Length: 95
Picture (cartoon, rainbow, N blue to C red):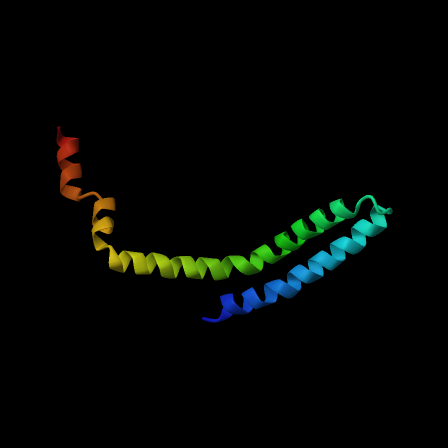
C-alpha cells in the first residue's frame, strides 16, 4: 500500500492523545497530590511520544528514501567514489 505511511502518520496523533490521557489517569491515581503536576506532565508527554513513534517511523523512512534517491540522481559522481574499483583491489592484493 503506497499510502500506508501517510495513514499511519494521521493515526499517530490520536494514538498519542490516547497514550497521554491514559498515562495521566494512571499517574494521578498512583501519585495523588498537586505537587506532582510537573512530573505527571513530563512523564505523560514522554509516553505519548513513545506511543506515536511506531506510527511515525514509516513516514520518515519513506521521505528519507525519496531524498536519498533524489540525491543519487543529482550527484552520480559520489556514488562512483564510494564504490571502489575492483581492478584496483586486485592490484593491491597482488603486491
